[in-house]
Length: 416
Ligand SMILES: Cc1ncc(COP(=O)(O)O)c(C=O)c1O
Image (cartoon, rainbow, N blue to C red; front, side, top):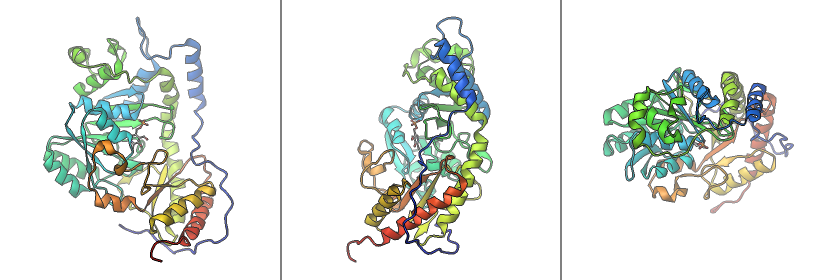
């Protein structure tokens, strides 16, 4: 792990003022989205399909715009990224009992999607750069040739995707990218979601686009797109999709595909469309805040930031750091920061808390031995970087974390 540690600054001892900004504050929906949603509410046409004489729906337009944004042929909108991940596995032919390789550092909806398909998660180790361990991936791929690799770009940390693709090619793995945290990011100028057979995105409130709940799957493959449209719950109304393969492909597959009722509403699509247009500005806003926070944290003794390779076009909507402290002191650090308004998540916590959990907590996925991942997660902390945080308030967050670190150092631990 490369340690970015410029001049170390002494830890503060005076208790700083509480941060009066909630780091979980979402941005307001753009006025254009509110106007489109209001218009829809007036018509009552919130369901994406019309029974007869269908006219272009917000959901269909959203799919077309999203596919065009990523430069992929098809997009299928659904009601969550977890649903999109499940549909990706299903459409790739994953069936009960199959192995699905996945990176071990991710969140519960990912092994959940594998369980939804009745498949078996096979977890691959995580490096201190917070990406999939390519050597372990090679080993697991050799043991499961032809499997699907479900790769989360977790918290926007993007692995060397050409190297991942080379492992996939060597062993016939089919790649599904979980881009819930990486919309707007990429590797060497190529967006995430365009490297695999399928890319899946989330538009749940805390992601880079916000429709409350929502997900979207992209692919260039006719059969995958057709199966995803049908299984998402299109009834015999799939002709109303405008981002879809030719009707003959859908007609031929329709009798074989169950309807899983995972549709996105027009209302969600209406609020998403204008957000996509301003995404690049928001990415710049996240990245400037990330840079300011990272700069402040890198100077604190006992704090390390993970490597961010030059080719990684990451979106800094959250920030991860390692603490060189024993578990009770990390707990004390989180409690003190929380009392000052900065909510820190710790991936080494013994129990799931709020959205955060780790592989040991997914009993349904089966116990797996992941010593390297456990060593990484035991020291890993994480904060949100919202646009609601003014740039100069990033320094207040750093002061609070510096103070919490100082308090945590005084916590007695076993043996001292
Ligand atoms: C890494 C990751 N993948 C997938 C998902 C699923 O997203 P959704 O909430 O839209 O189902 C989440 C949700 O938080 C996530 O964190």
